[in-house]
Length: 330
Image (tube, rainbow, N blue to C red):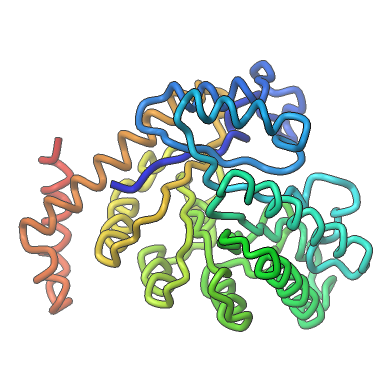
C-alpha cells in the first residue's frame, strides 16, 4: 500500500479573493503537523520554506516528527508568494529575481537534506502570462531550463538524493502557466535529462487541463519519471482541491489501476483546500476513497481486467467490470 501524506498548507484558515479573511481560525505550523500525526492512515506531510519551516522552528518540527512517527515527504521553496515573483520566478526576465528563486529552491534542498526529504516540487506558478503574446515563451523556456540546471548542479555537488519534480498546471494564478500540461512538462524533463529531475502529477491540475489523466500517468510512468503524486478532485472547471474521488471516482480508480500496473511505490500526497469544511474530515475521506479505489483495482484484476485490457476491444465489458467492482467492494 502506498503511504499517504498531507500538505500542511491545507490545515489552517484558508483565504481566497472573495473572502480575504477566511472562514476559520489560523492554526500554527506545529499544531498542523500534530493534527496530521493524529490522523489514522496519514504517515507524512509536505510543506514550504520559508513560510512553514525555517531555521527558527526546524528543531521543534523535528521533535514533533519523532513524537508522531511522521516523515517529511516533500519540501519546496515558495517562489510565488512575494512581490518580487509577480511576473515570474525561475524563468523571470530579471536575473536578480531568477537568482532569488534559485536560492530559495537551494534553501529548500539544504533544509530537506537535514530531514532526508525525498521530493522537492517546482511549481511554475507565476512563470507564464495573462495576455496573448505578453511573454516570449522561447526565451522563457531557455531561462527556466538554465535555472533548473543550476539547481540540479547544486544538488549533485552536495550529493543530495532529493528528486526535483515539475508540477504542471494550466492556469491560476496566471492565465496561462508555462508547461501547463503533463506532456509539456515531460518534454522539459527529458530535455534536461537528469536522474533526479522528474514529474509530480497533481490530479486536479490534470483534470482542469482536460487531460486524459490515465493516459498522462501512463506516459510519465513509461518514461520512468513519475516521482510523486498529488491527489485532489474537482469539476474539471476550477482547481477546488476537494478529496480525491468525490467528483470523479471512476477516474480516480483508472489512475490507481495504471499506478498498480506500473508498480508505482511512491507517496500519495494530499493537496487539499478545505475552505469551509473540517480539514481532518477531508483527510479521512481522502484516505477512505484512495484505499477503496485500490480495493476496486485489486478486485478488477482478480476478475480478468488484465486480460480484457490486452485486447482493448471490449469497452462495454470493461465498463461493466469497473461498475460492478465499484458496487461490490467493501
